[in-house]
Image 1 (spheres, rainbow, N blue to C red):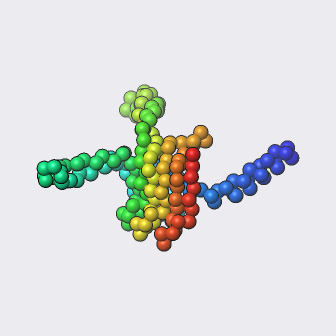
Image 2 (cartoon, rainbow, N blue to C red):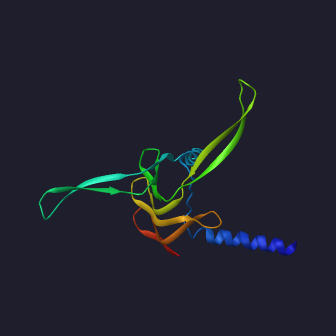
Image 3 (cartoon, rainbow, N blue to C red):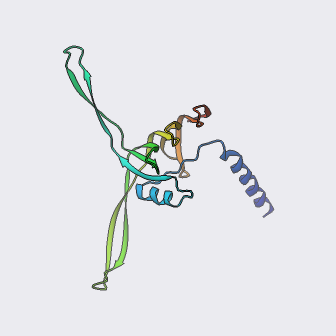
Length: 176
């Protein structure tokens, strides 16, 4: 028992010592779960979030013909989260989504019989670019996500940078 207590104390101090070295990123697998999470935060800072597929169209001059050619840029499906005033809080690319099914037994109040309701639930998986911003629009954190680690935390890959409100790099880490 004494050895277990020592392990817990060591684990506690290790957790405290390492918790300040990485950015804490909370991600809910769907927009509704994210909004419930933000609604419970005090003080309330995040206004809303949406999952969106962005398509951008630009016209580029064709140097051979001199005419304008339409070029369509399709960005990955992404989650956009906003501050209360509408400024962008963060944007992260979403990779392949998985879908699971949930079954619920409920009583039909009119007939008194039990009914089975099957509901498909989409689970977004963060995969790709991650950008987080200060309320004034300056970049705060930039990195790349690649799904989840075995312990359920977000898997960071490549170079991650964090800036202070004045635009100075305050942390830079590289992940495998």
